[in-house]
Length: 306
Image 1: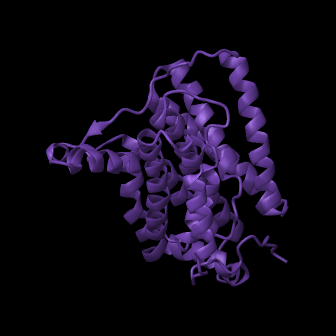
Image 2: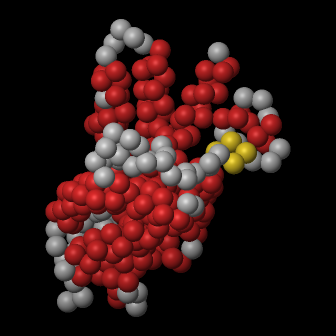
Image 3: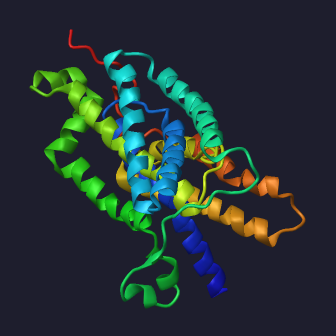
């Protein structure tokens, strides 16, 4: 029984990590008033870039950094069309998702070829936390994680502090609520939104890298498999706060971890049913969600100086 609980908790943390990393980035761009539907595509490009960089450099660190840079570039592209060009933010994000699917498939086949063999790369390894990893039960499940895993959970209080207790966080929230009023106070609304999107891209890119280099050790086509949309749901269900995103991603991560446990323990029910479980829980959570006070009033609205 203890072994089962330990295995479930460890699996829950692994499945939560990419969702939490991306969610902590997206919550800033969303609070700044930019709806980033392109999370799915950004994660996919980050996953592919991380594998390519790790493959040629032999270093998971290089792969992670490359994925973050790719996420930054994609986020700035989205920001350009959403903020500067003032295009419909949902359409821009959808276009990025469609582009990312074809882009990564094409480059993956050009670089690694079309074969049934899996190209293995240097991936994120588990790093036992000194002393705490020796504790019974929780040591091997909670305190034996990868660097991105530790980073994701440690960034939650940091993100909360920045958002709630600093001038930067106040400006981000103000831009999302009333950009024109914020501008009259001498703040550069466009720059703030660009910076929020840039940070979001870095985090989403790293999240994508964890999918291909933490959960697995290779890239497979369309491997993000809807996690980007789950992240968007987690931000909404989490009421646009870092702590709320943590709780929501833990719930969605637990559903994925439970999926693997049930698939391994049930031979009667087809595995396709268990594969639907995380998405079913996500849809149910969105359906029962009640809009909170933190939803940005100017979300998705283009800003013009005139």
